Length: 318
Image 1: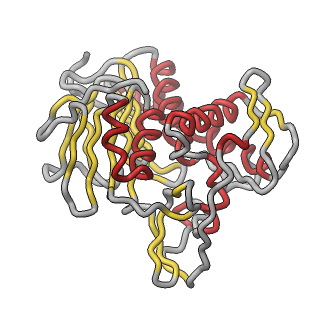
Image 2: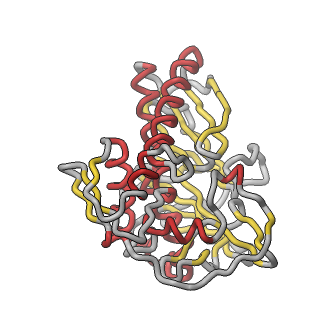
């Protein structure tokens, strides 16, 4: 625990805004450099928007046993774990579906409006089609399957970046925010890390938005209102329903979850958007503090998520 004298650095990476906050301002440059190194490594390993990424090469080698780096293996393992925990609601084999819906480049480069496209409902291949050995770090992606690690990759990057920054600083505390995927490590400010629950991770701090505090773990927000685009008269977004292969038609605008890691928070928040009306029961069963905003504007708070004010949200391990 430390006094509230913080160092802050803002930037952009992985197609989103970034923020690094440290409890020891003199260590900000060191922490930021460590974060940048992790994000560059994640981008090279797991981006589906780079032809030279390890993931792109894997997707281009169907039906072959492919050895992967420790980092990509970690990312794939996290994605498959998310699929198993959510009964396939969060599934890394949505790559082709996301691309066909128009999300075929880094989001900054995706045109917000465009000509109509033909979308066909088709169940995605499913995560069980992937043959993965964590021990041998090998993967077999079947023909016709395209891995997309977006539902867990950015959150994993937050967790790894926070850990790397803490190690580089040699003490103190750090918060890493990648477009709303937030991880903290080490010491925390006196009142905890203040986290604003808003639809857009780039939204400036405001008294109009609820703020909670955490002392460990991570927070993630998933929703259908920020990463969206229009093709013809159809509004599309990036969260795919594995049952249809189409952008999910959900009752939730956004879901924010606090968990033991940012990866677990993102798995849960994305799964909740996909699960729709089934989400509250699933979140309660896992004891996850969550804030769900319905399409009608009503707010639902679960498992200890504070009603109002700057209160503590306790993270839970999935």
